[in-house]
Image 1 (spheres, rainbow, N blue to C red):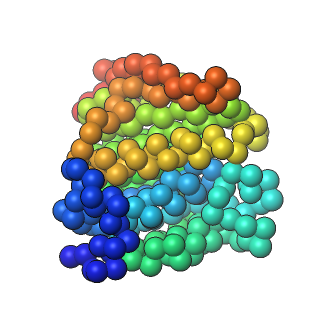
Image 2: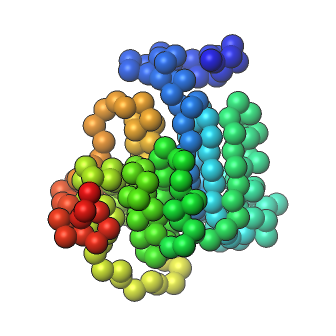
Length: 244
C-alpha cells in the first residue's frame, strides 16, 4: 500500500499513463543495485530514489576525493575522505525517507558478484573499469537479472540495456577486454545525461512498459549535441550468454 505522503510525493508520475498507483506500488516493491556511486551511479541513484524505488543497494569501495566533485553530485567538500556508499545512502535517505537504502563498502569482483546481485530486480552499471563490468555481466546472466550498462569518456556517453537471453550481453559487445587506462578526461555533465537515461530504463523494466534499449547502443555526442543509435548483436558463441 501507498501512504498519503507517498501519494502526494509521487503525484506527478502517478498521473502518467501506464504508471498510476499500481505502477508506483511496483516501484516500491523493486530492489535495484547501483554498482558504483561515482559520476554515473550518483545521478542514477538520485533519480531512482526520487522515483520511489523501494530498495536501493549502493556498492562502492572508494572514498570521496576532491576530483570527484565536478560530476559526482551526491557529495560535497565536507565529505572528502568518507566512504562514497555511506555518504550517498545518507543523502538519498534524506531525499526520500519512504525508501530503504543500503550501503556496501566493498569491491565487486568475480568471486562476490553473484552474491552481491542476487535478489535484485535490476543492476545499474556505474563502473569505470572493464573487469568489474564483466563480473557484473556474468553474475546478472547467472541470475537472469537485467543489467543497464553505461560508460562515459570525454564528451561522449553510451548506453545499452542487457536482458539475459533476449539480446547481446556485455561480453558480446566487448568480447576482448581492452587495456585499463588511468583516470580519463570527462566533462562533468556527461555522466548526468547518461545516468538519467539509465534510471529511465530501470523504471521501464520494473513497470514493464515501453521499448527497452536491447540490441541497441545509444551514443551521446555532446559536442555535436546529437544522439546516435547503432545495432549490437548477440554472439551465439559468447562464453557468457551463448548457452541461454
